[in-house]
Length: 377
Ligand SMILES: Nc1ncnc2c1ncn2[C@@H]1O[C@H](COP(=O)(O)OP(=O)(O)OP(=O)(O)O)[C@@H](O)[C@H]1O
Image (cartoon, rainbow, N blue to C red; front, side):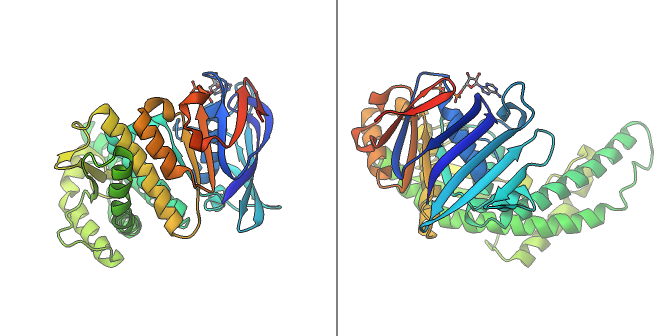
């Protein structure tokens, strides 16, 4: 799979731009702040409907404009598909696939399979559990787009359930002896257990498939300095490992019953996939809190490369983006990384200093200046 053309209207710093891209390595070179990351961020957004840098859509729209458009032509198996997204902050995104409008923006998920590695990914190792959950869920959706619906349904249920618990919590706090009306809580428990079991099963299956790739990728990047391991850490007690949806729904239901008084006490949902985490280890130690800066960096890279390998094993080779990564790596790691990714069907590399990119990756070059991109050859 590769992106043949990218067009942006009012996206980030770009008023209007169109770039033709090539299969194989594409290197985007330009001074700091000219808009290199903005270009790959747009592609990442098409792949995940999410930015790797910001949690809300407003910063994605050019200052002064009201909406942004990302359009890209994706070639897969010799066929070209046009994907278009219109981002209007505060409203649902509008999307087109080919000539037709999509019913929902999330229908575009799966059209572009892309793995992006960027400096922000250090947070996968050092940051909060939410970062690791997002990593898992984005990969889950890239592999099986139907999980976008599962994730959205689950998030909606947690939000509604939390609103109910919060109202009861506030009623109790302000002196109501009955503590608010929780009569519909059981209904939300059922929904939470059903959607939660589906999401949990998907994540557990994903982690089982991903784990050997993470160990292999870390070994390749860090040249045998410790073995990286990942394990899913659920908020419920899963003594018997299972991905059976019904069993998981029963486990979640029991856990909700057991934590009911604590949930009412705190006014929030305390069990379910939204409280889970991924444990990352390096040899016998947890990576978080123990790994050095370089090790954490290699670990984050290994997580992305493992996702890339897994998607490739599924049969569709994704686009790989390395945003600003070579400046962070020593010469040995640069060369090893170049060797690992040089065969990608399409690779997009951004850098401020051209010499930071190993010779093996010097494919098509582009010069990025403020608001413009020009092919350098
Ligand atoms: N919504 C927006 N409207 C206008 N300009 C924006 C918007 N969002 C970001 N920018 C501008 O885009 C520029 C940053 O672009 P980007 O992050 O792509 O830079 P870069 O070339 O990757 O830089 P570096 O090499 O430092 O990582 C900044 O100058 C910023 O002010």
